[in-house]
Picture 1 (cartoon, rainbow over the protein chains, first blue to last red):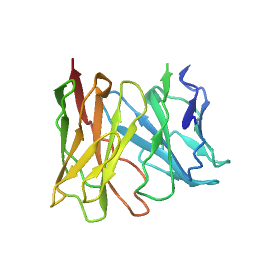
Picture 2 (tube, each protein chain N blue to C red):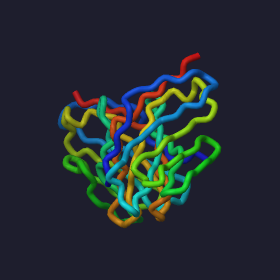
Picture 3 (cartoon, rainbow over the protein chains, first blue to last red):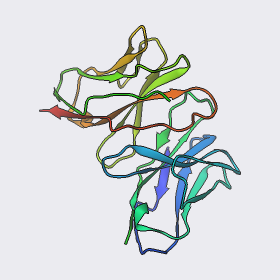
Length: 113
Length: 112
């Protein structure tokens, strides 16, 4: 049971390039989330999804887009990367019932030069 | 979501119980207390959560005061692998409370 898998684990981009981060979960969870974590700070929610085909903005959505075409996958896109988006990105998933905990992947370390 | 206050850092001897406090004096009736930890450079790991009763699982125990304004996470027999940042999070159970608000947490160091 892999849980939450993030791809890639590391990436270096130049300013203005685009890329997509992939998150896959095998726990049949309805909800999925994208967070970013900057040095010395807690995680901040970027976007989340409560089901296939549905997404919503979180705390820091600007500069990112997401898609949830399949229940098990949640994609985070950067259309035109900026140095301010250098961060560690974590994906999480959870069951629909709100008391259920979120399960996290091991992160994608992204550097924008 | 209610704000939480945790000590910045703590040390604990290996084999001893680690007691991590958290204040959440503005917690409301439908908000749960969650604990997560983050071991160096890994994703956060869920530990335990509770509403008002004490909870125990294979990883830890959670003690919530009767007025629910504070709680303590107890790792009964700390090992070196328990060295991590521990986050206390208060989260509502209503729709619209999807996000987990991570503060800066408590950096727990287990001393050999």
